[in-house]
Structure formats: C-alpha cells, structure tokens
Image (cartoon, rainbow, N blue to C red):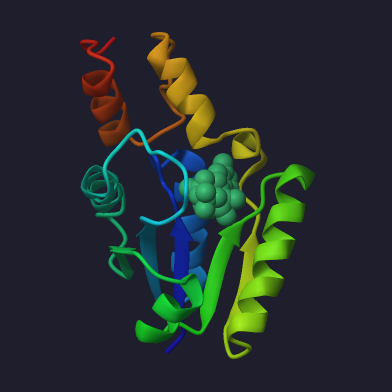
Length: 162
Ligand code: ADP
C-alpha cells in the first residue's frame, strides 16, 4: 500500500493542484492532501476554508483524503504512514526552492522520498497568488479553479457570480 502526502498552502486550491492530485490518485493507492498551517505566509482563506474547498473539489476521488497539519512535513508524513512526499513542478522557477526543500526533508528523514509531478502545460503558469490577484480585481477565473473555489472567491471579494 503506497500512501503519498501532498502538502501545500492551497490558498486556494487551483486546477493546477487538482491536475497533480488526479495524477497522484492514479499512481498511488492513497493520497493525503494536507494544508500546512505553519508556512509563514499570511493566507487569504482560513485553514478550515481551504480544507472545505479541497474536500469538495476532491469528492470524486475515493482514494484522496484532506487534512491539515502544523508540524515538520516529514514528521507529519511519518505520523500518517506516508513514505512519499509529492510536490508539483510548474517551471524552472519552482526548481530552486523545491530542490532545497527536498534535500532538507531528506536530511531530516532519509526514509521519506520526495517525488515531483508536472501538470498539464495549460496549468504551468497558474498559481494561487495570480488567481487571488485576478479575482480581487473582478477578472474571470473560470476554468482555472474548481467551481467551489470560484464561489468562495466571489464571496470573499463581495461579488455576485458572473
Ligand atoms: P507551497 O507554498 O507549499 O508551495 P502551494 O499551495 O502554492 O503551496 O503549492 C503546493 C504544491 O503544488 C507545490 O509543490 C507547488 O509547486 C505545486 N503547485 C502549485 N501550483 C501548481 C500548478 N499550477 N501546477 C502544478 N503544481 C502546482
């Protein structure tokens, strides 16, 4: 039984994240998508809201569960019986940070392997930050995020749906 942990901020989950989650659900027996609550950034959505959006977006994937954690990622992975950490790689710009993180995690726990997956090229420019920026100015984010996220963003920025 191969269980993989996909950690991140997911503030909010985008179709790029969903692409990675769906790929992982085909490759691994179980996928735990976990919202990190200690990652230094000040989020737009609370951990509870980010979890609600992920749960709704992953409802069609029976081997995916959603959780949150406030700890070292490797320690949380070990506590959940996950021997693999999954990260998404969009472009070269992700590489430095991900490389550093993967090597640090290996130093902290050599039993846990980090694997990377690349999304469909349609999503290689997509980030939670750009989605928030566009939504905050009333631009359309249709097709870039799950429907439930559109609704949460509309509510957050006080718009009725377009
Ligand atoms: P973090 O702050 O931990 O990077 P994110 O929620 O931004 O949290 O991203 C979680 C993971 O998903 C990271 O590995 C990131 O590179 C990846 N990711 C983010 N956006 C995309 C995307 N559009 N396509 C593929 N992977 C992505």
